[in-house]
Length: 294
Image (cartoon, rainbow, N blue to C red; front, side, top):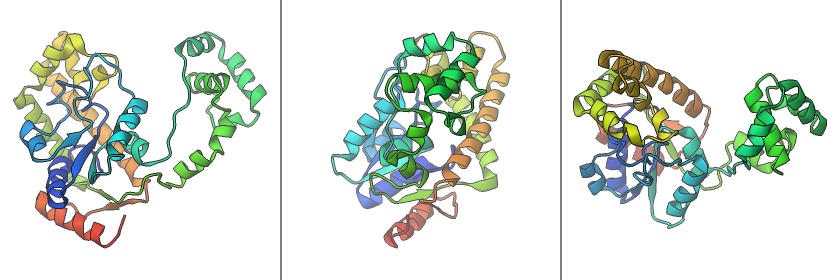
């Protein structure tokens, strides 16, 4: 069950999981962090008591938990064979669970060394080992060029080799590694009002206090989370509380646009007519799933 932030996925997924006797895997890059509850809109303790949830509260906010680690832990949950409802708004984390997605090698020392060279020199070396690399990499983007050369240095393949690999082809053609059926939720034009209400509710529930409490513990990844990044400026006195929450609402709208773009490209997702009653949404989801629609 996929879709943008503030589309009602949590309530609907819990209702669905109860109906089909399934557990839930959260595909959210920030719900993995303990203590980041209000700002990530985690299922409440009561909701989690109704249905077992996975990939929530698995690491401390000081830690870095990347998509590679997420995939390994999430795949282990799937491999138990229990019925699962995958729910969330992070398209990358969703695809890491169901698609043949591996991740290129990385070495910060190599990246730092390459990053210290003039862009022209890095581009020249990349082109010397892969004359077609400009077809796959923006050669005017230093970060992308350095990363491509780093991968090649570490034995992960040239840009062309990676682009024509069976895995890359399967990813482009949306051929899953793990069979699934997907439904999407999107309130359409009502999303703006729902984001506003969501932001107000988070404020009333104490998000600013949560950010202030966690501020000394937020690692480099956790501190970039929507809501936390903006309200850290309130905690440090750089902006007012009103300005902070206005920024949270604005950034959330931008996030929704990116999520919609990502998910709408995936032909495997069946988008349901949206309804503000989770029970009716569950009924529509079950009808699609029982008919064998993806």
